[in-house]
Image (cartoon, rainbow, N blue to C red; front, top):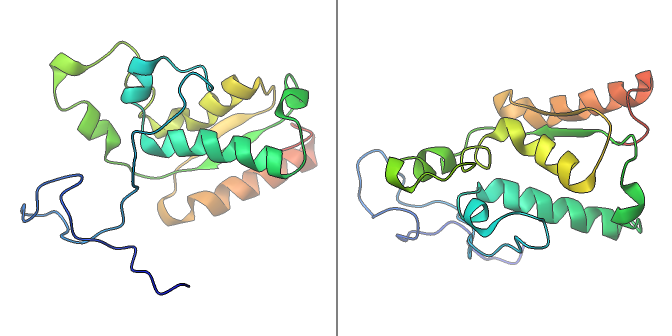
Length: 157
């Protein structure tokens, strides 16, 4: 919208020119910045956590606050979490060296655990799952949330 090209060519994630890897792509800046203590995540686990999950935690918290809701008031409620997620290279990147694997590092990279991490942090008691249907993941997650609200599985989603 502002005429800024967000697709860059740099070596922030991998060396330029490697066979099979794109030369230009969109990357998150400061991907390692995350308030682990605020989200009750051990620093070692946060270091090996998929950046998508870090953003999901942050944006979910911000969204609840932006809606004028105190997140503490949602604690223990029958709130459902339905996440649409797809592939990520984080799991491969963080598990490439077996010497650096931490006890719970893989749960921070498994997209299947994204919804559960949110439910755990906010102490939500409704359904909690991540769906992966490639390009339609978010649409299916929205459909699942609507169905759960209709059938009474949760009071909010």
